[in-house]
Image (cartoon, rainbow, N blue to C red; front, side):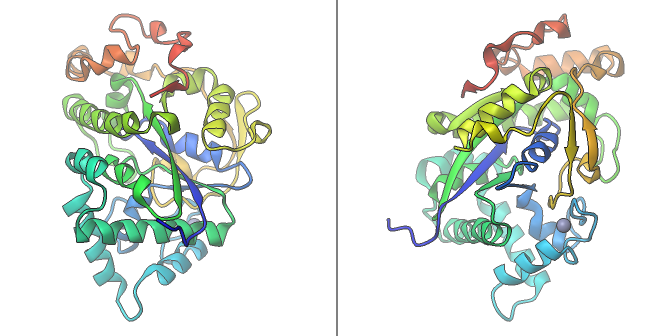
Length: 322
Ligand SMILES: [Zn+2]
C-alpha cells in the first residue's frame, strides 16, 4: 500500500489499568519530540462528559484545552455535532475493539466497515496530533488491546508496543478505595480484568516481537533510567535524550486525555523505588484471590507469593522481548 500520510511512531502501552503507565508516559513526555497523550481511546467519550473525567492534564476541560479543542474540531466531519459524532465513535469502539475482539483484529485487520472507519479515525488522530505538536513519537497509554491490535494496519503509523505489567496485589491495592474520579473495585474483580487484559496484550506483542517489550512496573521503579533507555531504543529515539537522572524528575504540563489523577501534578516528582503498599494495605484474603486469579501469568512474570523482595533485583525481565 502506498502511504500518503507521513509516518509517526506510536508507542502504545498496554496491560491492565493502574499499571503505572501514566507516570511512565509523563516521564517520556519530557523528551523533545515525544508527546504523551494519555488514554486517547477516551477522547470522544470524555469530550462530551460521559467518561470518567473530562479534564485534560493541563487542567482545562478537554473542549476548552487549546490543544484538544482544535484537534476535536479538525477531526469531526464538517457539519456534525460533537455529541452525535462522539456517540457514533463510542458505539463503534464498543462494537469492534473491545478486549474480546483483540485476537480477531490482530489476525484479520480492518476487514469490516466499522473497523475500517475506526482505523481511519485513529490514523487521522495520530497524524493531527503529530502535525500540531511536532512530535515524532506519540505515547498512547489507552491500554485497550483491541485498539493496539489495530495499530499495525493504520496508514502513516509505525507502532511500538510496551506490555506493562504490575504485581496484581499492588494493582488490587490501588483499586481498593475510590480515588478522585476513579471508582473502587474488589481484588477478585481487578485481577480478573488483569488476567484478561494481560492475555490480550500478550496476543498483540507476540504477533510483533521485534517491536515489542515486556516491562514490569517494579523494574521501572528499581531502574527507571535503564527502562526509559530501552523504551527510547524501541522507538528509535537517541539514548542521549533520556530525561531520567536519579529519582527526581521535573515534570512539565501535559495534555493527557485521561489517566491516573497524578497526571495533574507537575514540577519536581520523586520516582519511588518500591511498590509494596499492598503488603500492609491488602487483606490476606484479597492477596490470595489476586495470586490465584492471576495464575499462571503471575509466576510467568516473575512474581512470588511470599516475599515481595523476591520480585526485585531480578532484572532478567527488564525490557525483555515480549
Ligand atoms: Zn490540555
